[in-house]
Image 1 (cartoon, rainbow, N blue to C red):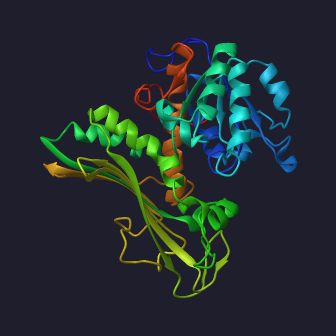
Image 2: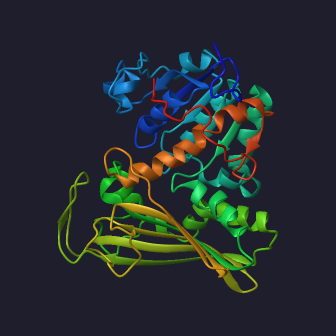
Length: 372
C-alpha cells in the first residue's frame, strides 16, 4: 500500500476499533473511516439491537463499510487492535469506563477517549484513576490520551495558541454556548444536567467540586503551560427556569417553571483574581435566559475564546455536522482531535498523555477524501 498524503504516514494501516456508537461514537466511525492512516477493524456496541448492523449505517454514512457491529468485547480485544476510540459515556459510569479502557490498554492498544474527566490532566488526577492506567500501560504497552468533547481543544490548545499572539495577558476565558435540545442523551440532559427538573432539584453537574473535577484539569494545564501558580480553583453557577412549556426537536417536552438553562464557571485564580476561566452557558431552548451569551447567529452552539489584554483577542468557532446541528459539529471537532492523534500516539512510547503532550496536527492526506 502506498503512503498517503505525499508521505508522513506509515505504509501499513493502523487497525482501529470504535467502542460505542452514541453521540461521540457515530462521529468516531466517520472520522476513522476518513483517515488515510487508519483501518476500521471493529465496532463494539452494548445495545443488542445494534449487533450485526454495518458500521456505515451506525455512523450515519450513505454507504456501508463492511464492518459489522459486535458486542463480543473479548474477541475484539483478543485480536490485538493497535488503537481504540473509546466513545462510550463515562458521565454516570466512570468506574466501568475506566475498567473498559484499562482492558484495551492491557491488550496493547493506544486508546483515545473523552470518557475520563480526571485524566484530562493526568498529573493532577486522583490515584484511583491514574494508577490503574499506569499499571495497564506497564503490563500491556498501550497508551491513553484523554480530551474533552466540550471540546477539549477549546479549553487547552486553542487558548494557549491565542495567548502567544498577545503582548500582555490579563485573563483567558473559554466559553461553550450550547443548546441541549439536539443532544441525544436524555438521561444525562435531564438528570446529570437537570434540564426539565424542578428548580429545587440539585443536578449532579452543579454539585460542589464536580465542575472542578471535570474541568479543573484543563485549568491546571493552561496554568502549567503559562508558567503561573494557581492560588485556588473556584466555582460559580446560576440557573434559570423556563417561562413557558417548550417541546424540543429530539428531547421531548420541558415544562414551564422547570430548569431551562444553567451557567457556570470554573475559575483558576492567580494573584487573587480569576485569570483562567472555563464557562458553560447551556440551554434546553433559546427562549430561556436570552440575556446570557448566545452564538453569533443564534444557532445551536458555539465555542469562544477571549484573551483579555493588549491586544484583546476573541475567536468564536462554530462547527456544523449532521445537517445544521452545531452540537454534533462541536463533538465532531473533539473527535477529530482524538482520532487525529492516533497515528502520532502509535509512533510514540507507551504512556499516559495529555493535550500539551500531543501536538495538534494538520489533516495530512484528508483534503477531499471521503470516509471509505
